[in-house]
Image 1 (cartoon, helix red, strand yellow):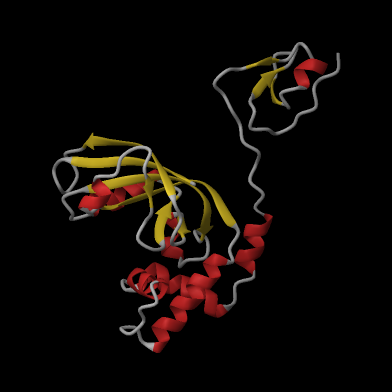
Image 2 (image 1 turned 120 degrees about the vertical axis):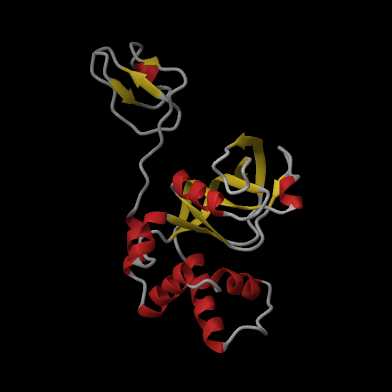
Length: 224
């Protein structure tokens, strides 16, 4: 019997007659009856990085400067939210220009699909969300592909209520390799404004090492 042709799929892993784990289309068992599914194990097709690399390589100096601004300037997030809300009266012309460039550049980036994390303080409204409800961040936000980075930000938050969001997104902008070198360890993915998420789960995790001396909320979100 010929071996099944290896295909990448999200439907599951299978093992062939020689005991070799392979990734094949589910209906291949009709042609290759010796293939047996392995329950509970799934694989994903490899991410095509061609578009991402082309976008990174194609950035001009103004766009690169906007990434540096976002990753190093304390006022950058505030200015992004002001601009997104149409409130620019407190911004200088230079701040408006560089913030506009940043927003447009991330909007034109290939969509990042995957799991990211955000650690931050939360207000009473965010703290009261429940599984099954719809959730939106207040404007564009920074997240990380590394849970450890999300935890760092959560631990450093001075707020009484703190959360680590695990976000399953399909519209982020992966800017991890175009921000300044010293910030690349944060593996940043920028999430645009007005993205809606469904709250999948929420639980409190005790952690006495947190600044609040108690712990944090672990909230899992899935983009709608």
